[in-house]
Image 1 (cartoon, rainbow, N blue to C red):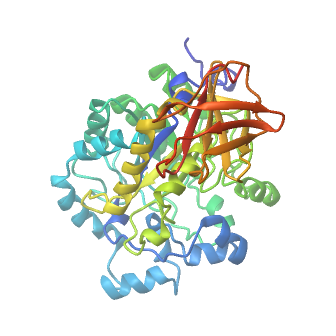
Image 2: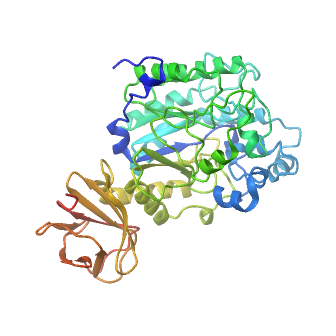
Image 3: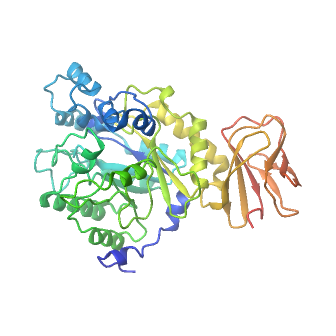
Length: 471
C-alpha cells in the first residue's frame, strides 16, 4: 500500500513478520567516544537512579558514549580522567583525527561474521550519537564542525557486509540530542528534554539526514533516540520511510515535546522511565525498554536494549565482573522472547573497530546455545502464559509455534525426574529434549513429570518440545 503523510495512514502499518520472528538483534555504539573509551563503572541504570537520583546518575554516568556530556560536568570522574590523559583543554572533536585514522583498516566482514554466529537476525548501528559526529559522509555536513564526520562510509560498508552475511541492517540516529546544535549540559532529567534542539535549522538537518539514510541504505529499522524536535512533521517522515521500505519498522523514541511547555508531566516521565522507556509518541511499531524487561506478555511488540555491561559504548574499565555472564545472557534472552519481545544486545567496539574479547565470547556463547535451541526461539510466539516453575524451583519459560509448545528450563536440573508444575498436555503427545531426543513424560494432577537423560550436560537452559502441547 501507499502511505499518506498523515497519522491515520502511518498507523495502518503492521509490524512485519520478520521482526516478530527475528528475536535477536545486535546494537553497535561506535564513534568518537570509543577512542577514550572511558566511564566510571557506576552500576545498572535503574538501581543507580533509585539510590542517587538522576543528578547522581549523570554526574557519574557509566554510559561511555556520553563522554562528551560527562566531561562538561564539573568535578565528574570523566572530566578528571580527560584532564589527566588528554589535557583539560583538549577538545572532544579532536578525537576524530584518531578515529578516522584507525578505522581506515577496519574490516566490517569480521563483525558481520561474528553477528551471524551469534544467532542475530538484524543489526542496528549508531549512525549519529548525541555528540553529532556522523559515521557516513553526508551531503548535509555539520554546520558547526568542519569535517565532523567519518572519512570512510562506515554505515555503507557495514550495511553491505551485514547483508552479505544474510542479516538485516537497521540504523540508529540521535534525533533528540545533538550537542553541536544545543550544548545544554545534561545534569538532570529535565535537561534531557530541554536539551532537544528546536530551531528550524535542526529540524531540516535531522529530517534531511533520516531521508538520506533511508535513500542510501534502506534500513530495516529506524531507531531514533531521546525524542525529536516539536516542529518536525513525523507522519510525513514515517510515510516516506514506509513507502521506501515497506517492511521497515520504527521505534518508540520519536517523542515530541511542545516548545515552551517544558518537559512532559514529571509523573508520566517517571512512570515510563521506571520501565526503561520514554513517554510514547503517537505512532511506533515497537517499544524499547532500556536495561529493563516487562514482567508479563505484552500484546504490542517490544525490544529490550542493553549493553553486555553497564555501558553501550566501549568502556575500558569494564571487566567480566561488570558484564552479564553467558548464562545470564541466555536466560534473559529466553525470558524476553517468552513475553513477545526481541533482545537488542549491544557491543561497544574500540575506536579502531576491535570488538573486545569478553564481548565477543558472550555473543559466541549465545550463538552456540541457539544452534541447539533456536527452534524454540526463531519464529515463535508467546503462549497463554510466559512463566512456570519446576518442582525443584527452576524457572521455566514457554514459547509456541502453531500447536507445538516449548518449555525452556532456565538451569540444569540435578535430578533426572523433573515436574513442570501446573502443565497439562494432550494424551499421547510426543515429548523431546533438544540435543538428546525423545524423553519419557507422565501427566499428573500436579503437572508434567519428565525423565531427563543422565548425566545431563550443564547448559544455561534446556528446551523441552511438546508436539501439540500448545493446542
